Image (tube, rainbow, N blue to C red; front, side):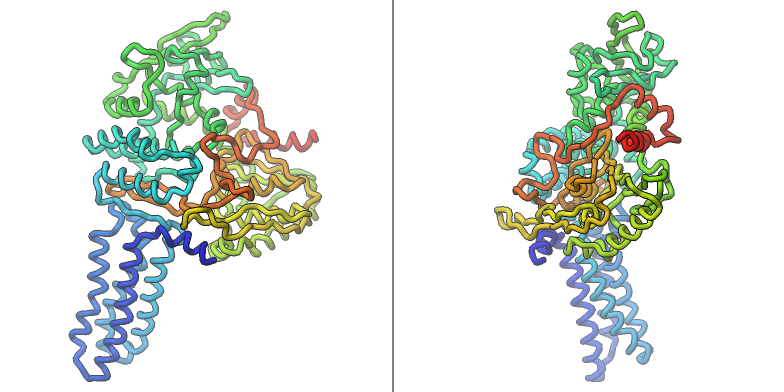
Length: 608
């Protein structure tokens, strides 16, 4: 327990501690001084003036230490500190009525002590390595953040991330953004920076939707009236072909086999693309490879006559300088025409590539809970006579029990709920169960531990928590999955996708070790599971980046679940759904009305 707390304390923001302790000391001091004034019969004028010192401290904090430009985060971290400081100032007024004040003052003192402690504890639990660089310039805040991550990012060595090299790679974008005061370019640059950590827990967020959207427009390239998808058989096919586009007018149709892009063989061109776009994260290379053709279809050719396209830095600088669609570059597409001949045609850009890009890949990945949109997390329903369905879009249920489970690895509330829910379904005839963890955004791994215990007759060790605060890894404790096994006779199919992350990954890992569970997906899960806690805020609160700061281990000492520099999947699928042309057409045709993956899973269970 002590080392677990140290893991959260070691990187805590010092200013939070300092100002919170000042608040607590002032609250106690004012209480004692008031009693002393009463005993000695002194005037309360000086004491009443002192009651405004905490408010002055809070105003000083707000002026120089708040998260500038981000009201939501400032409120999240500091609102109770500000409220308590304001409440303390009201004591000067309440002291006019001694009887009322006698009741109020001790309550206010206790309230302020609680608020001060809460202000310390809240970020220690959620964002222990919070750093505020909102008063620094673009360049300074970026450099400061890279130093934060060099010090606190817990997977730097495991993933072999050379942060100084990455900093220099991104720096031209940051400098240009600072020179032009371009918030969208800066945010896009930070998205690119986060991308190269290949970690589902490293992502960029911004409070302003317009800035977010504009940064995506920069990253999305250009719309050439078509997109591309690579099937499981290796063919790269044209999709989303617009009849008004140069692509269609020059013979490219839905399903045309693509052979090259901007003069480079199509698979080689796909390999050269980095899918940098918003919060998309790709610890597993195979998951990114599914997306890459769609982004390649937004890349214009170089204007220096060389084949291929610019790297992401040069491309972002070019895109940021575009004022209207006439300045967008053309692209050269190679394909097999209706006569079986290979042709190359020039495509003129029709605008920003974001809409067609998203129309291409979103139907493949955002399909979870479509059949039962009103079903609450962890709840179940019979989907046919012998098969039940469980919605599992997060590993969170009740904040109190969830936080407690962080230390105990047990969640009796969730355990009881699952037993009651599954018992009821079993009484209704359940012999098979589909647990839908697609898009599972994680939470606390105790819920996965409790779930797995219901499906296994043999206990097993799951993972270990550890600490590297003092150099070499020191194991704190091992998490054990107990053997309840009351539902071990149920055939379980777990659906995952690349948006199943964090404690969702842990759910996939622990359930995969149960003999009656099959893991299925079009893609594997995200493969990111280290505990988060790092967050650095950039200039003026334009955006922030989050990252993990703690340590979880496999039983053999490797990092728990997270991929290393090879980016190979650590939670392999038992059944990988092949992306065929027929399945792809189903995704596009029935995106709004049908859960294609769930239908595939039901067919799989029926055919067994």
